Image (cartoon, rainbow, N blue to C red):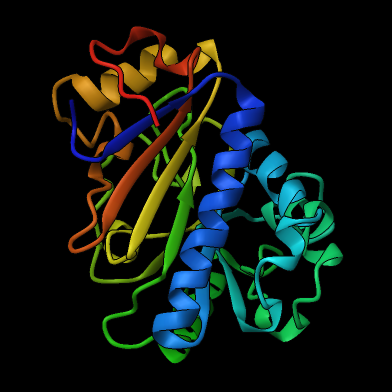
Length: 247
């Protein structure tokens, strides 16, 4: 079994509940320790359900939203109202429904030149976070090709890793994207993947239990330097793992 704590849930709903509860638990701890909670969100269906749960009681009341600061692990280079925008998804799922100050939400400006957007976002990270820039929680997904954030197969995911955020061209999608680098992701205090569905079973097994080749399977580069790594997966996604662990 690869590094990290693998927790398996019976269905997508219980998985989404676990992601939402992790958000609350890490947030409460961060606020007790440092006064604020800084989280990087991911896109996708699993986090969408978790975000919706965060906008509902009782979870909505479990955290002082004025002390939550939101960032994004990656973004497609589209306007913020585009249906492909991770920011749009998070805004509609929960950011518009909780009392978080708009100034606390830092979106990647997908409508800008990709390189400029990446540099500007890195500047925001450097300004907001301490040195080294450690996010309290980084939420990630796993693509069917082994990508995570916008780190895609084909080149070493830690290429140019002296930067915190970079622009990448996703050949498989024919579009530019902006992503946090492994350097920034791996500084996270808690880094958590959420993975669901039988269609992810093969790739999850390869990432966790196959040969280590981050160029082919970029998700394998995620290994927090001094934080914890969690894999929250549903039973179908875990179907090809040699070992199973229960939450």
